[in-house]
Amino acid sequence: MIEDTGDKRMRVFRPVHYAVAGAYAVLSSVASVVLNLGVLASALVVGLPIAAVAAFVLLSKGQLGKGGKEFDTTGATTRATMTSPLPPGAVKEIIKGNVRDHERFELLHEDQVELLIKAGVSAFTWGEDIVVRLHPVASGTRIEAECQHKQRTAIVDFGQSRRDLQQVLRGVSSASEQP
Image 1 (cartoon, helix red, strand yellow):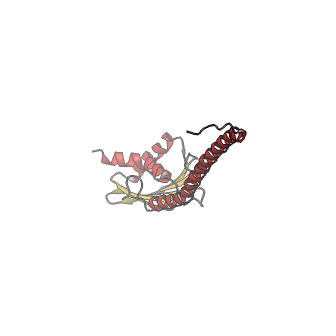
Image 2 (cartoon, rainbow, N blue to C red; image 1 turned 180 degrees about the vertical axis):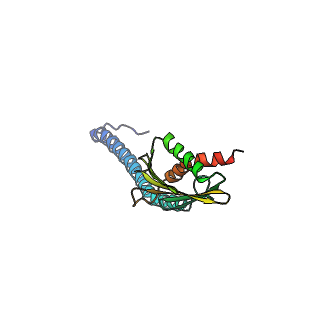
Image 3 (cartoon, one colour; image 1 turned 135 degrees about the horizontal axis):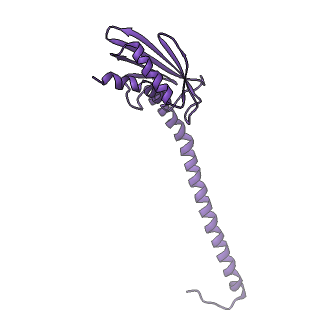
């Protein structure tokens, strides 16, 4: 316990001492917060590019998402190949039905062996061009589909091309499995 000697200097010094100690505590707390934010910012600056590169590599190799065996993703272009026991005309009608049922899709061109489909803007893309080629084979129809971004500089599509191809080809695979 500190004794009050009655010295006038001590009575003036205590409030100043408490004010300085309080200011020091506040400043050290602020410095600690700033230092922690700096560490967090450093982690984000280093971590985000690494995560982006890892996501790009996994997406470009087709490791993220379902059905990696029949879909081949390279950069922002996705290709799918499948065979259906149905004749090319029936496959074409199923695909056209899928395009009509989906609000983002529009059939731009069709001929005997090819369908050109436009996929509109979504949360993940500025749109894609989907080309479906139908080749008659002995066992039915060989289907080759390719989905490419309209923005040719796109590197990663976050799986949107794969989802669009699955939507276009979904009716073909379910119709092929029926007896």
